Each structure stands twice: as structure tokens, then as C-alpha cells.
Image (cartoon, helix red, strand yellow):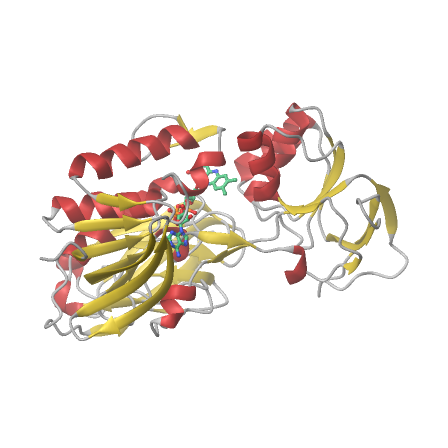
Amino acid sequence: MSDNLYDVIVLGAGPAGLAAAAAAREKGASVLVIEREQKAGGILKQCIHDGFGLLHFGERLTGPEYALKCLEQAQNAGAESLFSAFVCAAEKEESGFSLELQTQGGMRQVSCKALVLACGCRERTAKQVSIHGDRPAGVMTAGTAQYFVNVMGCLPTKSCVILGSGDIGLIMARRLTLEGAKVLGVYEAKSEPSGLARNIAQCLNDFSIPLHLSSTVTRVFGSERVQGVEVCRVDENMRPIEGSEQRIDGDALILSVGLIPENEIAESLGVEIDPATKGPFVDQNFMTSVPGVFCCGNALAVHDLVDYVSEGAAKAGAAAALYDATHNRMLTPLAYRKEDFLCVVPQFTDESSLGNMMLALRSRHDVKNASVELVFQNGAAKTYRFQRLSPAEMAVIHVDAKENGVVQSVHLEVRT
Ligand SMILES: Cc1cc2nc3c(=O)[nH]c(=O)nc-3n(C[C@H](O)[C@H](O)[C@H](O)COP(=O)(O)OP(=O)(O)OC[C@H]3O[C@@H](n4cnc5c(N)ncnc54)[C@H](O)[C@@H]3O)c2cc1C
């Protein structure tokens, strides 16, 4: 094997990429992890709060501690890694994939038999939500604010408004308050919060930070630096209600308005994208519509628990290591009602390689006492009970597809 040819190349050294790399090595594959940043860990590097790892490592860790454990696993397994390396182009070749990289030492070409995409996701910016006014300094995403505070040690605001009730925004509301800034309010256009219930309680309620539902920011004031924002109520179609406008003075607008999986490389390889997750369609082995290309972590679908990222990514890495280009898949789509679920992953079952399957789903609405029924191709059905399902919390079901066969559909019922 030449220096530049690997069985598996993993793009991204966040928790997903590191878990995929460790699992692929454990199956005996030669593995290269490519990361555009200088260090491994992905988004966890800036998440200095704790609460990570209870399921996966059985202990309560901070983001950097969790990332370090993942890095050690990948390194101990013998995965090679390349940092500060940017993938400029990826191409499908007859016997695998070739990648063109820009590295600190210049351009480099590497090839592999199977590719694992673990590139994470990016935050929506002010450009993707309609806010009138100038773009003065002080309009930033919650992740950028988190980077300023936790990595650079700078406080980017003295008093701010947060738009959107996503988890990063909630965590930053608490963090900025602890650092001495005044968070004037969190404004959410939907009638329900987007973040986890525990984050609403621990990050807003515990610090008396007001959450305004069915409300949004319509205008930014200020030319060089934000001087204030205009907020208003919205109707059930999320249209601003005339006459409800109010000006709030502050020096920053922090956006927590959603995450989008990073899939430029997947798309350049012709991977089909699910409009529901904005990540690739995959089967239970995390293989995309392009044979030999696997996807996991936040690049596949936005996860709220890193523990599930690690679990799924390990399956993806192991499957990539065992990838056989001559094997023909037998894919059955998994049906669900869009009125019940925002998304279900995987979207396909490959009948030719059934095994343990991890099924992740998000309900469209908040549902208490929910039953999720899986119907198998042989007509059998299994029911899983949940005290509560919520769009903010990904639910995971483990299915033994070897025993039960192909999952044909998922149904939601409310117990009375
Ligand atoms: C603020 C915040 C708070 C959170 N809190 C919790 C919590 O309390 N508990 C919990 O369990 N989870 C939490 N999460 C979720 C968890 O951190 C994520 O689900 C997890 O980090 C996603 O892992 P990933 O590897 O898919 O993506 P990332 O961590 O984003 O890693 C992706 C990596 O890929 C690299 N990359 C991207 N494109 C390329 C490319 N083309 N070439 C090379 N490299 C590339 C990136 O630089 C990055 O290092 C939180 C997330 C955030 C943002």
C-alpha cells in the first residue's frame, strides 16, 4: 500500500470522526483522519460546561475532557491524523476516492477505499434570517460568542439580546451572565422553545433571564456597533404583528437560530441529501447513497447528545472498514408520517447486512406518553414507550434487525 492510500479516510476530528477512526482501526483498517483545525475535538473544545459523556463513558465530563478521551481512543487504536489540512476536492475513482488537500507543507493527494464524512455542522447566521438594518459589529452567532468567551477569554458584550432558543444560545445566556454581561432576553419565533428542557431550566430560569416565545427581532440599530434591536410579537405564521414593536438598547445581538450539517464535500460526490435532516440519506450502516461514502455525527443530522454521536460514528467507522465494493445493497426505505416526525435516521435499511440498528428520531410536536411503533417487513411490530417526545430532543431506539428483519415504517401514537 502506498503512503497515500488508506483503507478508510475520515474527514473531521470531532467526536464523530475520532470514534469512527478508532472503530475502523479496531476492524484492522489503515485509517487517516483529516482535520482542518490545528487540534482535534471539534466543537467540544469550546464547550467548557459539563454534562457530556454520561451514557458513553459513564461519567460527567466537560467538552474538552470528552474530546480528549475520544482522541486517546483514536490514537491508541493507531489511527494516523493530519491537522491544519483542508480538503479542496474529492473525487470518486474506479477503486475508491481521491482527495486533494491543502496542508501546511503544500498540496497533497490521498486516496482511500472508503470515506467517512464527519464534518459536523455550522450555525445559521443573520443572513439566513430576515433582519433589517445595518450589519454593525456585535451581531454574532452563539458559537462565535462562545469561542470569544471560552477560548479567547474576551467578553464580546455588556448587554445583549439573544435571538433563538437553541441550546447554544441558552448555554451562552448563562455563560455571559456568569461573566458579568446582562442578557436582556431570549426571543423565540416559535411558540415552544427549541432547546432542551434542562437547558431552559438551568440556563434561563435559574438566572431569571426572560424567554419571550412567539417573538422575534426585526431590526438592528447602530452603524459601527450595535446600539439596540427592535423586537416584536409574531402570529401563528411567524409574521410580525404590527404595533407590537419595541426597541431594546444593548450592544450585541446573539443568534442561536439553528445548525446546518456541513455537506459540501458529500454533495460534490453526488451524495443525496435528505431535506428533513439536511444531511445525507443513509442506511443502518451509515452508508450514503454513494457506495463507500459514510456519514456520521452532526454532518448526518444535528445531535443534541454527543454520546449518540460517538455511538453512531463507531458503527459508521466499523462499517467503512468492512466495506466491500463488490457487495450489492438491497435498500428498503423507512416510511413515517411527516405530521408526526421531523426526521428519522437511517432513512433506509440494507437487507443484505442486517445487524444491530440505531434508529434516531425527532417528533414534530411535544408529545407526552408517546408510543413509537416499528413495523417490520414480515408484518411483526414492536412498541417503544416514551414519557415525552419533543422536537428539541432526539430519541434513540436500538433495534436488533437481525432478529426482526427490515424496519418498514415508524408510527407515533399517544397513550391516553
Ligand atoms: C454549545 C454546544 C453545547 C453542547 N452541549 C452538549 C452537552 O451538554 N451534552 C452533549 O452531549 N452534547 C452537547 N453538544 C452537542 C455535541 O457537542 C455535538 O453533537 C458534537 O460535538 C458533534 O460532533 P461532530 O464530530 O459531529 O462535529 P464537530 O464537533 O463539529 O466536529 C467536526 C469537525 O470536522 C472538522 N471539519 C469540518 N469540515 C472539514 C473538512 N472539510 N476537512 C477537515 N475537517 C473538517 C471541523 O473542523 C471539526 O473539528 C453541544 C454542542 C454545542 C455546539
